[in-house]
Image (cartoon, rainbow, N blue to C red; front, side, top):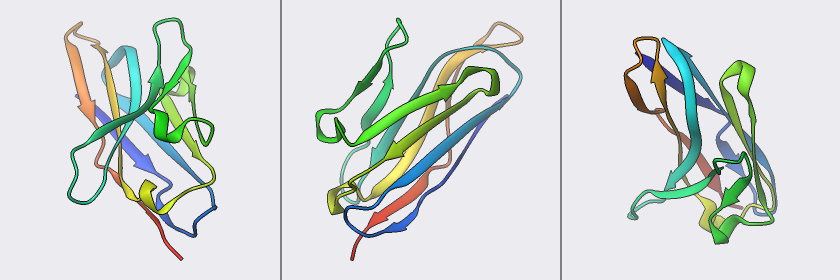
Length: 120
């Protein structure tokens, strides 16, 4: 089994910053992708940021220039640095990972989510 554990959410004022972390653990052989999603109250979950196959970063338009995704491959960890936060960024942020377990079975795993609230 593969587990994802997120951390770093909280309450922040508009214009502030937060850094989210997501660590994957368990019977991991390799990870193909680790992305961030979010779900705002009353809305569907949306993809926020991830890496292309070439290792380049990619973002939803609404966060470009404000959010930065990074990763530590050796630690199976992905980060999301969020700057210039806006009230509309308020959501539960989820980490997603896809890869292979030691058994070579493909896994798709979600974290439990971490709440980010942007409010004055």
